[in-house]
Length: 443
Ligand code: URA
Image (cartoon, rainbow, N blue to C red; front, side, top):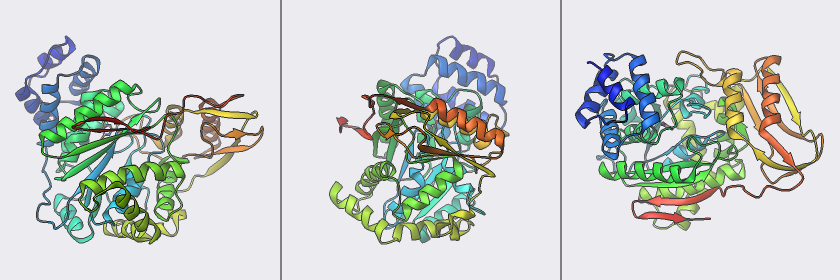
């Protein structure tokens, strides 16, 4: 395929025809277009955007690059959730087994770390033995038997997103509404689900920090969902500070397990509940938000959610003892405590600085070939609005070496901002609900 003229057209602000997108994606997925040409095209898209028709064609072509799972034979509905990406965002690890333990099947396809944000696949693979590469047949069998599977894009399922996702990560072409929308919706629609809940992140740590862009992204994905017969709801949630306390692959897995055992930090649980309520409503097992919330709380308190996670881990080859003994997760060689350099109010904990530091410490990828160190990261005990004393421990750094500890401490000194007055501009945790009918402002 001759890709040069297509790159030129996108570079010069033009559009590709739907058939051109289909041919290009099929050729790229089949290994007949090199990464460097696709990277140039992605950069042209990043700079010049895509029309709604092109976005739909790209998402459709990416969806058609692999198989579409089918679950219409099940007695329950299949629903999933996806986040546009954040720092400390381990909600998927909690939510998939939690919702599945309430009687809705969750065939979750996730991605790896992207840019400064963490990825569910990396967090799952921190569990010794855990296999995220299930075949479509294995995935269907696991959904039939335990109602939950947590897998990655593969040669068979969403293969175009698998390649494009890794390429975008390494070429600074993530922050594009059409590319994010096509990436997310192509793999979610491949799950054959009956409903989808999107967690669209807001604020400085989100890929798209402006509210207007976040709403546009939400609407673009909702339109793609509707066009493919998948009812889709989006919640806008705060990413102007990390979610929860743990940031970094294995540290987040550990915090997600704590959450499943009923010991999750408040902000993580609030976002998890908000998204879970929407999933249970779409899944048809609750008829109103109060009943849905009560069902989620009961699944956590009774231990059913943690038990479901244990079944998923065992079914996918992981060591289920991790639920009771999270210390079997990879542990950092070096740990240090970071203390507040002065007294005052925490006015900012900047997620982008934290996420980039994790990459710099080896917990994320700089190139497509990089292997990550799952043990590195941070546990940050403070949130914007907290008052701290000089010398009070506010965070811990987990690293592979003393050099890594220094990088981490330096990042914390930039990320955690202290001032005499409390902050006036902290985003509400869950601020907007977007559906095909419109936007509801929640807080
Ligand atoms: N999540 C995805 O799956 N893709 C993106 O592009 C961003 C977040």
